[in-house]
Structure formats: structure tokens, C-alpha cells
Length: 238
Ligand code: UYC
Image 1: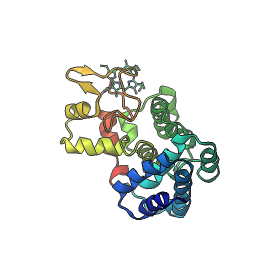
Image 2: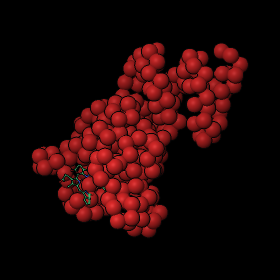
Image 3: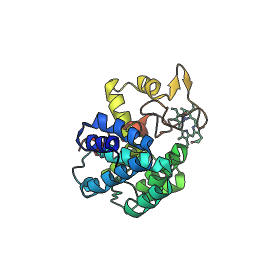
Image 4: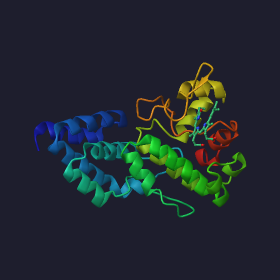
């Protein structure tokens, strides 16, 4: 390995998270030698990926960023490597109801955020039960009983594949930051501008240039009670 790459490899292992995230981009820019370092790093960290997860530290930020950066390259050797060692990413796809979150993970890895948003709504309905699946939307009264594990998995996937920009826990943090004032939340996450609601789907920003907390969406047509129940769910503080 060239000396400069070795230095980056050392820093990737030893620097604080903020620096690690910058090093990832530098290693990607190096090309094959850099990709090899990133793949090795993921393998080293693999046994730890299941541990130390609570709603406070729902994902391993650096591992998720390495995975996503590698995935974005679409380089053949990387595609094969990820397929072999991380076929469903770095977030454990835990579900109390045996729901399969692998499709959502793959859509998010491809950064297809509009499809991921649809898939998320669908999963929430599946979690709520067959009546909600038929209806295609959830009553606020159904939210409370949604399994925390599943909500945490969905949230962790959004965080992992968005550099922690998107996810219910991000929306919750912003909501608490504005004293639970809905109008201030809508402005901050780009769901409303002045008196105008952002129109679904075309006016929403389906990529990482969106404001923090922009996604996933919750339709407000029937009021704020669904999103209120979602952001107040025990999944985020238990
Ligand atoms: N839509 O405006 N939305 C839909 C949002 C509202 C409306 C879906 C978000 C305001 C209608 C999603 C915002 C409103 C439908 C979202 C937003 C409105 C629809 C698809 C900013 C009018 C057709 C999934 C707050 C003033 C379907 C789903 C229907 C759909 C999301 C209109 C994800 C974040 C108050 C007419 N909107 N929605 O849930 O239900 O249907 O009739 O929030």
C-alpha cells in the first residue's frame, strides 16, 4: 500500500468520528487501494455490528458511512464484496413480527428515497395489521402498539443510508428543539413554506440535499395525530 494510503488507513481506525467521515471520502478518491482499505475496515468491524445498540446509538455511524460510500462506487469488486459479506447492509434487520426489511435496505442503499418513503409507509401499515394494509394508511390510535424493535430498525436504516439526515428520530429531535411547535417543525424540515404545504410528491426533495428531517414523510391530511404519536413513541426513549 502507498504510504499516503497507509496513513489514511491508520487515521480511519484512530481518529474521532467526524474525521473518520472525512477520511472515507479521501480513501474513495484514491481508487482501488482506498477501496481495499475500506473493505478491510468493514470486515474488522463486522463482529461488533450487533452490539451496543439502543435508541440513543441506533446505528454505527462510521460503518454505515463506509458501506454507503462503497456501495455508491458500483465498482465490480466492491459489489461482489458487499454482496458476500453485507448482503443486507450494516444494520441488523430485527423485527418482532418477522417482517422483511431487506428490500427497504436495498432501496435506501441505492439512494432511491422516494421509493424508500413508499416502502416505509407500507411497512408501517404491515406493522399495524391487515386492516391498515387494506386501508393503506394508519390511524393514530394504531401507532402506540407498533413494535419498538421494528420502528428502531426502520429508523436505523434511514439514518444509516442518509448520513444521519433522515429518520423519525431526527424529526423528533428537531420537534423537541422547537418546543413541539408543528408549524416551526414543518418549516425546518421543508414540509411547508409560509402558508403553502409542500406538494406530494413533486415538491419534496428526494435526495440528500434536502433539509435534515425532510424524510420519511407523514401525510397530514387527517391531522397531526399520526406524526405526533410516531414522534412520541417509546421506541425513541425506552
Ligand atoms: N403531503 O402535503 N396528500 C400523500 C405529505 C397533507 C394529500 C402521501 C406531506 C396536506 C392528498 C404522502 C405533506 C395536504 C393525498 C403525503 C403533504 C395533503 C396525499 C402518499 C406536507 C393538503 C392523496 C401516501 C405536510 C393541503 C392521498 C399517503 C390521500 C398523499 C405526504 C394532501 C406521503 C409530508 C395537509 C389529497 N401526502 N397532505 O399517506 O390520502 O396517502 O387522499 O399533508
